Length: 303
Ligand code: GLN
Image (cartoon, rainbow, N blue to C red; front, side, top):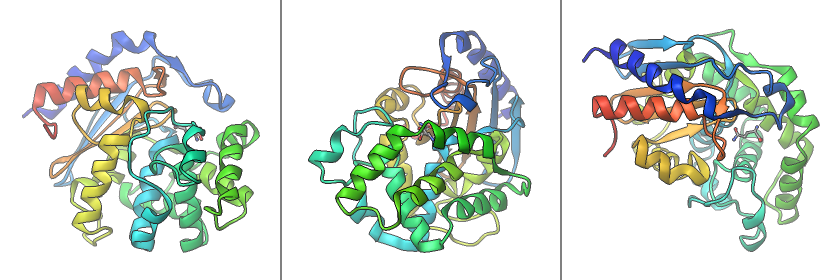
């Protein structure tokens, strides 16, 4: 298969829809992103990397970081993750608080902001520095030592993060945070505000395509845990649009409001698409379209 040609075709398919989305501006530092930027990268399990468009331009990874914090919490802490967060799709927006009361402070899944805050809390307890743990992992897997948190984005999130502060305090009121709310949020913003490119993220996600094996050949996760993360990505990774994402793309995937989506093709590789213009669920319109085009043309889906 001519991967390069298929990537370019997918980027071309995305360009016409970019104008239908809107750049996230509830985090003011993200509002300046160029809505016409677009990139797509493919990394294969045998170590090849391909890309088209703006695939080497760093962007704010935002909620894509939740997949790495979950993987590291599972690798370090094991099953206790699932005592503190569920694994059911919520059908609610990523920043929703509504189910927290009926579910007694146990977030529905680890990819909602509420669930990711709990996972960050656990990772902070386990490692002493959750932001650092995620950054170091991304650097090691991507081979990009310059990859870092953008302090302006992290500060912007903290200054406007009333909803996240509210849900974190609400979770704490049920006893499901071990560390002070302010510390947990600072680490959560530190990993959300990491800047990385499609290339970096595609390489960093390859452990999920390799059933738990890292770039250096060591095992991060058991095959079972890698399978489980892929399952939760498929059902919950794109929030209340997870059904539509499965319908169109047919892959486990994680989106972020910076406009990136990292998708896993188990046993084969990873795809990372980026375009800052978002749909109403907070997923990149261009990224969903490009991934749809690529998986439809190549047959690279789990279905
Ligand atoms: N850091 C963002 C927030 O807390 C992440 C949201 C997202 O990417 N969906 O709102």
